Image (cartoon, rainbow, N blue to C red; front, side):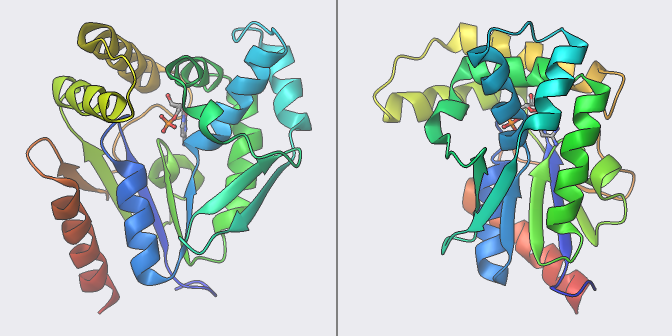
Length: 226
Ligand code: DC
Protein backbone atom coordinates (compact mmCIF):
# COMPACT_ATOMS: atom_id res chain seq x y z
CA UNK A 1 0.00 0.00 0.00
CA UNK A 2 1.29 3.48 -0.93
CA UNK A 3 1.13 6.54 1.34
CA UNK A 4 -2.37 7.59 0.24
CA UNK A 5 -3.87 4.17 -0.53
CA UNK A 6 -4.05 1.79 -3.48
CA UNK A 7 -3.10 2.61 -7.05
CA UNK A 8 -5.85 1.11 -9.21
CA UNK A 9 -5.40 0.79 -12.99
CA UNK A 10 -8.36 0.55 -15.37
CA UNK A 11 -7.48 0.00 -19.02
CA UNK A 12 -9.46 -1.11 -22.03
CA UNK A 13 -10.92 -0.23 -25.40
CA UNK A 14 -12.80 3.01 -26.11
CA UNK A 15 -16.47 3.08 -25.11
CA UNK A 16 -16.43 0.37 -22.45
CA UNK A 17 -17.38 2.77 -19.67
CA UNK A 18 -13.89 2.91 -18.12
CA UNK A 19 -14.35 6.53 -17.05
CA UNK A 20 -17.79 6.09 -15.49
CA UNK A 21 -16.68 2.94 -13.69
CA UNK A 22 -13.40 4.49 -12.57
CA UNK A 23 -15.08 7.62 -11.25
CA UNK A 24 -17.73 5.65 -9.35
CA UNK A 25 -15.13 3.35 -7.80
CA UNK A 26 -12.88 6.29 -6.85
CA UNK A 27 -15.81 8.08 -5.21
CA UNK A 28 -16.64 4.97 -3.16
CA UNK A 29 -13.05 4.70 -1.95
CA UNK A 30 -12.52 8.43 -1.44
CA UNK A 31 -9.73 8.31 -4.03
CA UNK A 32 -8.87 10.69 -6.87
CA UNK A 33 -9.78 9.71 -10.42
CA UNK A 34 -7.70 10.53 -13.47
CA UNK A 35 -8.71 9.77 -17.04
CA UNK A 36 -5.36 9.80 -18.87
CA UNK A 37 -7.12 9.87 -22.25
CA UNK A 38 -7.94 13.49 -21.38
CA UNK A 39 -4.22 14.27 -21.53
CA UNK A 40 -3.86 12.70 -24.98
CA UNK A 41 -7.03 14.50 -26.04
CA UNK A 42 -5.62 17.82 -24.77
CA UNK A 43 -2.44 17.28 -26.77
CA UNK A 44 -4.57 16.43 -29.82
CA UNK A 45 -6.71 19.52 -29.32
CA UNK A 46 -3.64 21.75 -29.22
CA UNK A 47 -2.18 20.00 -32.29
CA UNK A 48 -5.46 20.60 -34.10
CA UNK A 49 -5.73 24.21 -32.90
CA UNK A 50 -2.20 25.05 -34.06
CA UNK A 51 -2.70 23.32 -37.42
CA UNK A 52 0.13 20.85 -36.79
CA UNK A 53 0.16 17.57 -38.71
CA UNK A 54 -0.52 14.83 -36.07
CA UNK A 55 2.15 12.73 -37.82
CA UNK A 56 4.82 15.43 -37.44
CA UNK A 57 6.90 13.76 -34.73
CA UNK A 58 9.06 16.69 -33.63
CA UNK A 59 6.32 19.30 -33.63
CA UNK A 60 3.97 17.08 -31.60
CA UNK A 61 6.76 16.29 -29.15
CA UNK A 62 7.71 19.97 -28.73
CA UNK A 63 4.08 20.78 -28.01
CA UNK A 64 3.79 17.95 -25.46
CA UNK A 65 6.92 19.18 -23.68
CA UNK A 66 5.47 22.67 -23.42
CA UNK A 67 2.01 21.78 -22.12
CA UNK A 68 1.57 22.40 -18.43
CA UNK A 69 -0.93 20.00 -16.86
CA UNK A 70 -2.37 20.79 -13.45
CA UNK A 71 -5.10 18.91 -11.60
CA UNK A 72 -7.66 19.97 -9.05
CA UNK A 73 -9.49 17.35 -7.01
CA UNK A 74 -13.28 17.77 -7.30
CA UNK A 75 -15.93 16.73 -4.73
CA UNK A 76 -16.93 14.02 -7.27
CA UNK A 77 -13.39 12.54 -6.94
CA UNK A 78 -12.44 13.55 -10.48
CA UNK A 79 -9.09 15.24 -10.94
CA UNK A 80 -10.15 18.22 -13.04
CA UNK A 81 -7.46 18.93 -15.61
CA UNK A 82 -6.18 22.33 -16.63
CA UNK A 83 -3.87 22.76 -19.59
CA UNK A 84 -1.74 25.89 -19.37
CA UNK A 85 -4.22 27.06 -16.75
CA UNK A 86 -7.25 26.50 -18.98
CA UNK A 87 -10.09 23.98 -18.49
CA UNK A 88 -10.79 22.59 -21.96
CA UNK A 89 -13.86 20.59 -20.92
CA UNK A 90 -16.33 19.20 -23.47
CA UNK A 91 -14.20 20.37 -26.41
CA UNK A 92 -11.95 17.41 -25.67
CA UNK A 93 -14.78 14.95 -26.23
CA UNK A 94 -15.55 15.71 -29.84
CA UNK A 95 -15.26 12.57 -32.00
CA UNK A 96 -12.57 14.25 -34.17
CA UNK A 97 -10.42 15.09 -31.15
CA UNK A 98 -10.55 11.44 -30.03
CA UNK A 99 -9.39 10.37 -33.45
CA UNK A 100 -6.46 12.85 -33.52
CA UNK A 101 -5.63 11.74 -29.93
CA UNK A 102 -5.29 8.18 -31.16
CA UNK A 103 -2.86 9.46 -33.85
CA UNK A 104 -0.67 11.65 -31.61
CA UNK A 105 -0.55 8.88 -29.04
CA UNK A 106 1.61 6.82 -31.42
CA UNK A 107 4.41 9.36 -30.78
CA UNK A 108 6.82 7.53 -28.47
CA UNK A 109 8.59 10.56 -26.99
CA UNK A 110 5.36 12.52 -26.51
CA UNK A 111 3.97 9.48 -24.66
CA UNK A 112 7.03 9.47 -22.41
CA UNK A 113 6.32 13.10 -21.46
CA UNK A 114 2.69 12.34 -20.54
CA UNK A 115 3.64 9.08 -18.81
CA UNK A 116 6.06 10.94 -16.54
CA UNK A 117 3.32 13.36 -15.52
CA UNK A 118 0.88 10.49 -14.88
CA UNK A 119 3.41 8.79 -12.61
CA UNK A 120 3.73 11.97 -10.56
CA UNK A 121 -0.02 12.04 -10.05
CA UNK A 122 -0.32 8.37 -9.07
CA UNK A 123 2.90 7.50 -7.27
CA UNK A 124 1.53 7.97 -3.74
CA UNK A 125 -1.60 5.93 -4.44
CA UNK A 126 -5.14 6.81 -3.44
CA UNK A 127 -5.86 7.11 -7.16
CA UNK A 128 -7.90 5.28 -9.78
CA UNK A 129 -6.17 5.87 -13.11
CA UNK A 130 -7.87 5.03 -16.37
CA UNK A 131 -6.32 4.70 -19.83
CA UNK A 132 -4.84 2.24 -22.30
CA UNK A 133 -1.43 1.47 -20.83
CA UNK A 134 -1.71 2.15 -17.09
CA UNK A 135 -1.28 -1.48 -16.00
CA UNK A 136 1.29 -2.30 -18.70
CA UNK A 137 3.54 0.79 -18.90
CA UNK A 138 2.67 3.67 -16.57
CA UNK A 139 2.25 1.58 -13.40
CA UNK A 140 3.22 -2.06 -14.09
CA UNK A 141 3.33 -2.32 -10.27
CA UNK A 142 -0.23 -1.03 -9.77
CA UNK A 143 -1.91 -2.72 -6.80
CA UNK A 144 -4.83 -3.96 -8.85
CA UNK A 145 -5.48 -3.84 -12.60
CA UNK A 146 -8.67 -4.11 -14.62
CA UNK A 147 -9.11 -4.41 -18.37
CA UNK A 148 -12.60 -3.60 -19.68
CA UNK A 149 -13.73 -4.73 -23.11
CA UNK A 150 -16.92 -5.11 -25.17
CA UNK A 151 -17.67 -5.85 -28.83
CA UNK A 152 -17.22 -2.90 -31.24
CA UNK A 153 -20.91 -3.18 -32.21
CA UNK A 154 -22.06 -2.92 -28.60
CA UNK A 155 -19.82 0.08 -27.99
CA UNK A 156 -21.09 1.82 -31.16
CA UNK A 157 -24.67 1.23 -29.97
CA UNK A 158 -23.85 2.78 -26.58
CA UNK A 159 -22.21 5.82 -28.22
CA UNK A 160 -25.22 6.37 -30.53
CA UNK A 161 -27.54 6.23 -27.51
CA UNK A 162 -25.32 8.67 -25.60
CA UNK A 163 -25.29 11.16 -28.51
CA UNK A 164 -29.05 10.83 -29.06
CA UNK A 165 -29.72 11.43 -25.38
CA UNK A 166 -27.63 14.60 -25.66
CA UNK A 167 -29.85 15.65 -28.60
CA UNK A 168 -27.08 15.18 -31.16
CA UNK A 169 -27.17 13.45 -34.54
CA UNK A 170 -25.57 10.00 -34.57
CA UNK A 171 -24.73 7.75 -37.50
CA UNK A 172 -24.24 4.16 -36.27
CA UNK A 173 -22.17 3.00 -39.27
CA UNK A 174 -19.83 6.00 -39.14
CA UNK A 175 -19.37 5.58 -35.39
CA UNK A 176 -18.73 1.85 -35.71
CA UNK A 177 -16.11 2.50 -38.41
CA UNK A 178 -14.36 5.11 -36.21
CA UNK A 179 -14.36 2.74 -33.21
CA UNK A 180 -12.84 -0.07 -35.27
CA UNK A 181 -10.25 2.26 -36.77
CA UNK A 182 -9.28 3.57 -33.32
CA UNK A 183 -9.11 0.06 -31.81
CA UNK A 184 -6.86 -1.09 -34.61
CA UNK A 185 -4.53 1.89 -34.24
CA UNK A 186 -4.44 1.71 -30.42
CA UNK A 187 -3.66 -2.00 -30.39
CA UNK A 188 -1.17 -2.07 -33.29
CA UNK A 189 1.03 0.89 -32.43
CA UNK A 190 4.67 0.10 -31.69
CA UNK A 191 4.74 1.88 -28.32
CA UNK A 192 2.52 0.91 -25.39
CA UNK A 193 -0.09 -0.90 -27.54
CA UNK A 194 -3.47 -1.52 -26.01
CA UNK A 195 -3.51 -4.98 -24.44
CA UNK A 196 -4.40 -6.42 -21.05
CA UNK A 197 -1.54 -6.68 -18.54
CA UNK A 198 -0.81 -10.32 -17.75
CA UNK A 199 -2.08 -9.82 -14.20
CA UNK A 200 -5.16 -7.75 -15.13
CA UNK A 201 -8.71 -8.81 -14.27
CA UNK A 202 -10.37 -8.85 -17.72
CA UNK A 203 -14.06 -7.83 -17.72
CA UNK A 204 -16.25 -8.31 -20.81
CA UNK A 205 -18.91 -5.64 -20.35
CA UNK A 206 -20.97 -6.52 -23.48
CA UNK A 207 -23.78 -8.05 -21.44
CA UNK A 208 -23.38 -6.04 -18.24
CA UNK A 209 -24.85 -2.69 -17.37
CA UNK A 210 -22.74 0.03 -15.76
CA UNK A 211 -23.87 -0.78 -12.23
CA UNK A 212 -22.99 -4.45 -12.65
CA UNK A 213 -19.49 -3.53 -13.81
CA UNK A 214 -19.05 -1.10 -10.88
CA UNK A 215 -20.24 -3.78 -8.42
CA UNK A 216 -17.89 -6.39 -9.91
CA UNK A 217 -14.85 -4.06 -9.80
CA UNK A 218 -15.68 -2.89 -6.26
CA UNK A 219 -16.01 -6.48 -5.07
CA UNK A 220 -12.62 -7.43 -6.56
CA UNK A 221 -10.97 -4.44 -4.85
CA UNK A 222 -12.44 -5.30 -1.46
CA UNK A 223 -11.29 -8.91 -1.86
CA UNK A 224 -7.81 -7.58 -2.63
CA UNK A 225 -7.81 -5.17 0.30
CA UNK A 226 -9.05 -7.73 2.84
O1 DC B 1 -9.85 7.08 -23.46
P1 DC B 1 -9.98 8.13 -24.52
O2 DC B 1 -10.94 7.72 -25.60
O3 DC B 1 -10.30 9.46 -23.96
O4 DC B 1 -8.52 8.23 -25.21
C1 DC B 1 -8.29 8.97 -26.39
C2 DC B 1 -7.07 8.40 -27.10
O5 DC B 1 -5.90 8.61 -26.32
C3 DC B 1 -7.11 6.91 -27.39
O6 DC B 1 -7.52 6.63 -28.70
C4 DC B 1 -5.71 6.43 -27.19
C5 DC B 1 -5.03 7.51 -26.40
N1 DC B 1 -4.64 7.07 -25.06
C6 DC B 1 -3.45 6.41 -24.92
O7 DC B 1 -2.78 6.15 -25.92
N2 DC B 1 -3.00 6.05 -23.69
C7 DC B 1 -3.71 6.32 -22.60
N3 DC B 1 -3.24 5.95 -21.40
C8 DC B 1 -4.97 6.97 -22.71
C9 DC B 1 -5.42 7.32 -23.97
